[in-house]
Amino acid sequence: MLIFGWGYKTFKKYGIIGKSKCNICQLVTNWQLVKVTTWFTLFFIPIIPVKIKRMILCTNCNTGHIIDKQTFDKLMNVIKSNKYKVDIENMQYYNKTETQKNYLKEMEEYKKKQENKKHKNKKKLTLKDIIDNSNVPNTRESLKKQFLEMGLHKGMTVIVHSSMSKIGWITGGPVAVTQALMDVITQEGTIVMPAHTSDYSDPTGWENPPVPKEWIPIIKENMPAYNKNITPTSYMGHIAETFRTFPGVLRSDHPQYSFTAWGKHAEEITAGHLLNYGLGENSPLKKIYDLNGMVLLIGVDYDNNTSFHLAEYMIDSIKEEKLGSPILVDDERKWVEYKDIELDVDDFNKIGEEYEKESKVITYNIGQAKSRLFSQTESVDFAREWMEKNR
Image 1 (cartoon, rainbow, N blue to C red):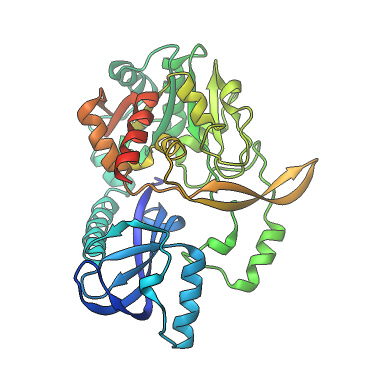
Image 2 (cartoon, rainbow, N blue to C red):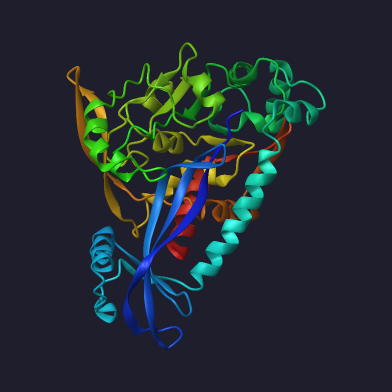
């Protein structure tokens, strides 16, 4: 069974860049260059980086400051040259207000938590364990009954994120889950799923593992163009990939952040998905928002809730970046670059927890999977307000 997720972090130290007085501990101390990477995981193995924080840390109290990539690269050259003469006091931080106290300690605690979670979930990956943990086989009819009991209904617009292995043994696997959803929602409603292809990206940013520098131009020149009809999803899970292949399912045109949809509003939701800002105002997420759609999380946490990214485009404290992918332009393959923002899933579970305290979130077991059903529009509005106050 495919297990995927967001939020696994790695922490790498690069070296000392100089000495300066720390405003927190009030000592003249060494400052260290570090990088914190949040990964997209497959079978709990980090695959693709989704967020990189570049920082300098006080080696005494572990206070940190975020810096931009250009500054980070300059400091890397300083470390390589062994000339530690950086004017830290006058350095331009990317965001001086985003001071991270005791960051090393937090990262160690987080790492232990992730390792414990990884080992715990690894025990559930075998087919035998899935069978043993299932009271009875899940079927198309039993899943349909549970979806109805949870609150899904005919005519609803809903975006679904799922982990099939968490449901338990399913007769018919992802086909049965997809059919059960379609039985409930019907063509009078709309089912949406993410169909992202994050590996259709610039290999320059690949880090786990990185590819040799001399490979990068070869990869960029030969990576097939994104084709919404044949390009498979990347790390989205069995259900999302199976849904993509069903008759009547449409897919949007974005080479990294595409979505699939079936039903009444499928064409409206998938049309006009522009390259720039792929999860923002011109994305399928915003179409679902305007339709007052719902979010269904089956066996996954809020860090899988792609809709929270829409809120990131609505706040002021964002940083832009440039992405690249191969696409078809007039039936010819071309590598194109486009604008987006740096996305951050680190606080999505926290936002979800706070949202549950103030809003109506229906929780129900689909098979063995703890699942949640809630308003996409209301949750995005809540996330935007939360981010404005806390980021």
